[in-house]
Amino acid sequence: MSVGLLLAGAAPTVPAQVIPVASAASVGVHAGPSHTVLPVGADVSTGVRVALQTAIGDASYDFSPAWDATAVGLVFDVESRAFQATAAASGGETLHELWSARPIVGRFVIEWSVAVTGTGAASFAFDLGDDGVVDVTASGIVNATLPAGRTPLRVRVDTAATAASVSGPWGTSITYQGTARAQLAIRFEPTHCAALPFAAACGGPTTTIAGNFTGGASVRAHCAPVDDLVIAVFGFGPQSIALPLSAGCRLRVDPVTSAWRVPGPTGDAEWPSSLPVGAPALTFATQVVGLDVDAPSLTAGAAFWVTLH
Image 1 (cartoon, rainbow, N blue to C red):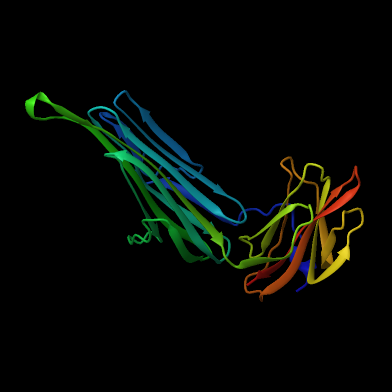
Image 2 (image 1 turned 60 degrees about the vertical axis):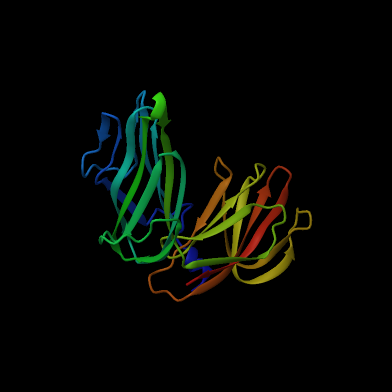
């Protein structure tokens, strides 16, 4: 398989091939007598915020999804604060479904951060497969293969805090209160791609390479403001050829094909590729070159070996 075939039909961006949907199972917040609860089954696929602010306590629940061709992210920000004699709580369960166009070998990266004071408490549970078995309750990595079709996930996140005054001897009283703030970030990313740099950048674009949900890789470049064009060079072997119009930079990839982009408003450009299901492992080299038309001048990004397996 040639690199030319690998890139055939590639557009500046590849549509996400893993689509997340989500619904509320038991999501709500309360502070003392005040409460807000989402209807069971409410569609929260695009995210949701539920919040209460009272004089005696606050509670909030935020869910924000994000996805592209290389990862799916689910982020939960949950907080409870009790100031006076009350109980505050926020959280609950959401049911998620990842719909994949093809089998994807990957991993769930789970990051859990908590800040509590006083009576505050926080916890989460991640059930991969929605089979009633809790797989994760702390930060970690879970290797998984998504089948073609539907993969269910159930996520529960909770925070709680209480405040009160307790009478003590000789007319004394003790007042206690608490706060709890937690963030749970769950990211699913494919693991079929490995990228290893073999030549350093020479003032050129910053290059990152990640496996995508179409079985290939997405080569992404962040360019300098002066770059009018960026060219991605692909090949199967290394070389070292001096680049013209540069301060000693060199092209490190023996080119088989190349593709250029005009950087976007943020200076970013992307070259996605794909491989069919069952394709053999493939290794190729790539390097991104930036062109300043006004100077004119060329700069070179780092060169990488990329293996898809």
